[in-house]
Image (tube, rainbow, N blue to C red; front, side):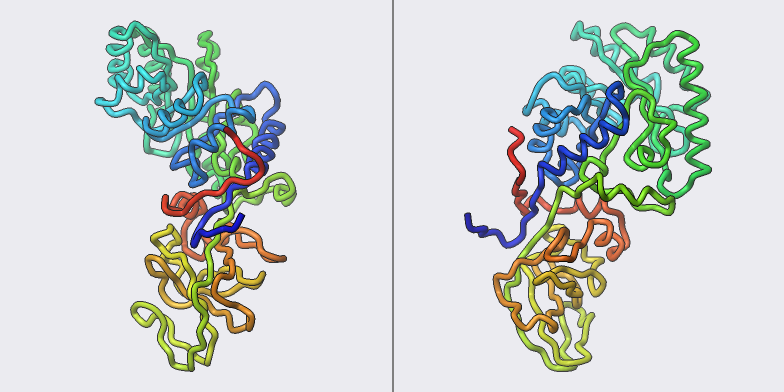
Length: 380
């Protein structure tokens, strides 16, 4: 079937299945996988990815807000969902009705859920968040045990989870080990008191690779599920590329090729001026599609399997690249923004580095006007 899209993303569902299977192998059959599907499943398309993950063995979902939880519920019932962000006071009743587990940092939050649980005559299961060094949410470790005791005595409240979040596991070994020690000591106090916890989790994608001692009974991968290793200063095994496959490719087309003479300015602000005569291709993608403007004059794309540098400022719907080395380049040619073409590959990590950001932003920045085309079978 002919592709009539100007800018689109292709999602390889087989790669996602394989990535999840590798994570399952790494944590073992007894470990639970909480797959993080925030921000439209990291730009891959929440409903389609949730359906695939339900079929492929995820145990629990992690979301940022109630809208994401409701989207998952519309695909399939029965999977536990943890809302990783704090539940606002006016969201408490909806979260309880939808059986979304909240992340609790304070006793006031637990009390609000207790009131609703009694009114609904339905228990609310909560995860206690512990702040070991991230600073956003969570109770201080020295207060977490008392919080758990008090919350568990509230009518309708069941403490079923305990977790923390590494702040810089990809870069700072010593600080990460200190976080792990704080959480581990707290967990021991819970276990000595006989508290049974269904979900104990600390390991995000980076920690899955670098801090295996804090695997506990649940892991919380995000980026790894989508086939991308978190970048950082701490080295990861070179064999990782054999086990993970990026699921998303991002493509557009050449709309026009023209020759320009030396001295010609390109794009807004005349940020590029040709130092020689050149062949320049205009592409059908821009920051309106999510391609970060900070890649101007820095990023590269693939045309005919060759790397072509971006020239001038990226605009809302278009950008320009140098195709001087490609005499056969013409309107309609496929262009790869992320992914493989011929023998060359541009990764999300590479694009992030050119743009001075992280791969999470590159992926989640891809806008809704970019259709997602699913390959490798269906998930629904």
